[in-house]
Image (cartoon, rainbow, N blue to C red; front, top):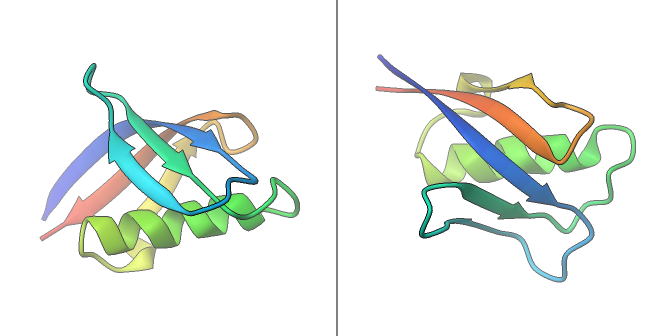
Length: 77
């Protein structure tokens, strides 16, 4: 198992969902979901699990759950 911790800037209420790495090495996640009742966080976890080809349970938000900048932990095989 390999564990990665990445910093992700989240933009909720976007027109399309996307996940990309900027030139400076930071990650940007655009989410369709609004930041209400954890919906954006759920979508972020699903998006990262798909991107890194792992299960949703292997993705967790370490810090920043209620903010735009999040530290996300990803465990991949």
